Amino acid sequence: MRPDGTRVKGLTPIVQALPYIMPKRFDAQNWASDYVDEEIIKQYIRQKRRQGQIVTHMSVLAAAYYKAALENPKVNYFVMNRKVYRRNHFCFSFVILKTRADGTPDETALKVFLEPGDDVFTISRKIREHVERNQNAAHNNRTDRFANLAFSIPGLARCVFGLAYHLDQHGLLPRWIIDLSPFHTSLFITNLASINTRFIFHHCYEFGTTSVFICMGKPVPDPEAPSGSRKKLLPLGVVMDERIATGIEYSRFFAAFERYLKQPELLEQRLGTECLVGK
Image 1: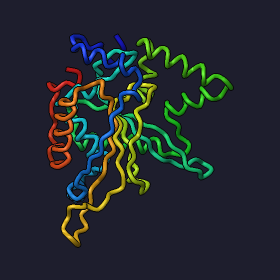
Image 2: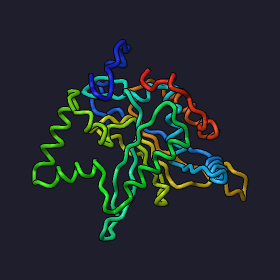
Image 3: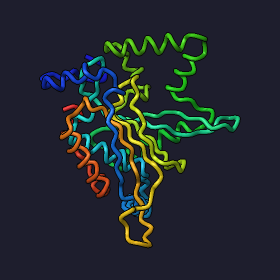
Image 4: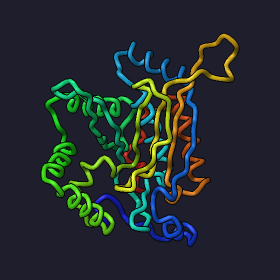
């Protein structure tokens, strides 16, 4: 048993066979694009801000994904060493830009853990707190400090990451390393709209347990909007590990995900502790 998940038993033969047919995560990646009504999200964000609540595109997307995952828990599974595991928590990772003391831009990866009682407001607060703590040019989070230590001695990084990869393959990687690793996550999000860039299909990392990667791109005009309309859509590039769920299970998940994005007010409702991620 791994510290971050439990082996799933009773799978059908074909599902058990998939990790052997496609042993690497990049073997099993499927790509899909989706377009979200940007006007609905912007209107919701403006409405909440008038009410004194701060929500962002990132918090709305993360909340919608999380609520849909609680209803469709197989998207929170992961594959490691040809075995399928049920994750015992839910978290998502993302990257922020910050400026070094000398003025050069830098990046750092953050990871936020969520609970079944979270709603869009608590998720927004958690994101904001993580960002505020890590935007200080002089501040390095635990992940940064671990990486800096690994690269401080020539050759050490290869040994450290090679050992971590080997331990992870056999379920022996300590929980504290898993908790600080942004690559051991239910979902990885990147917001390229924040740097005015089109969306991409970002690979799921082979190191770690990332099963789904979502990229938000800069909004684009709605091709079906009436002539003269300035309506825009938010494009999403989604890459997913097909070994963790069947096509119909992914279909049901994305139907719920889209429903929440079309009705973001539903994200204000707490699902309650009876809806467990790892059921």
